[in-house]
Image (cartoon, rainbow, N blue to C red; front, side, top):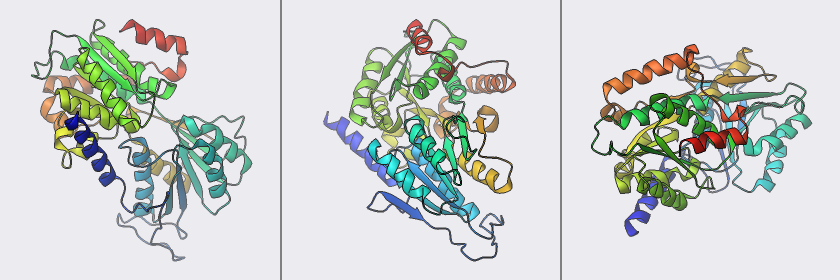
Length: 387
């Protein structure tokens, strides 16, 4: 147990060190663009900035340092600052949902050009705020927008076909069972899934993963589990360890901020983990190599890149706030992290097959199911069919 909690502490410290620089002691992080003159100026990339820098604020329905969704989104704000000369602000709202409405109202009454937020848990307050401030522009990621509520066309929706990336994770995990890897017991046809919460956006990863496994071998067993929290690292450690003890040879972990618990469990039992949202191996390999070594890859949801694309689209009028844009494998918004660990561990024939499957999904030869389009009963039936 002492070693376990030392590993958790090390992971948390690594998480803190890797959180975007410049974080203040308060709950708000602000970074102003340097181009404040009235004439346009060139950025480091040689791009021409607007005469007046765009002002963008991101409301985090949680805290930075999650190694996933929130950090990825924040990275998009930093790119806007560096590439567009934008004035940016990142507001960490924490987990007190009663405070969210006040935060949204505050920034909506200020002079921000675009207000950015995302994920299902804050959708209602975001949409209601946008409806109350029709002259403001909003970008809401990881969800479509209810146009019956936001009737003035001032909120852009961005959705991600995360089920497509997780389908590739399922194909990878299933094929690795027969790879001959020393960490894998080929006689145990069992994989695992650890999600943060039993909700639709997490189950979208599950559905894609299960279908990817079935695509390779429908007889493989997948044991699912949920932490019941987005942030409980010790519980995620405990539950992921249980999955490995029950025979799971590889675990896929869309576990939000609790994912360091899953990575620690994989290290403790010397089994592989597939992480989620950001390239966790690359983030931890230098500061925490013992935890990073068993992270086979990550399914990527490149939120930050999509936000930069959206803001650039608003600036050049190629994108508008009255539409929702769905981004998948074809746009590079989702996929697998092909990092050093992936390239070293995964055999070439499996890599080639993953490329083939990816192209089939892009061309429409493979249609991946989505929890967003399924009833709760349908998701449960699929999940139970593979236990």
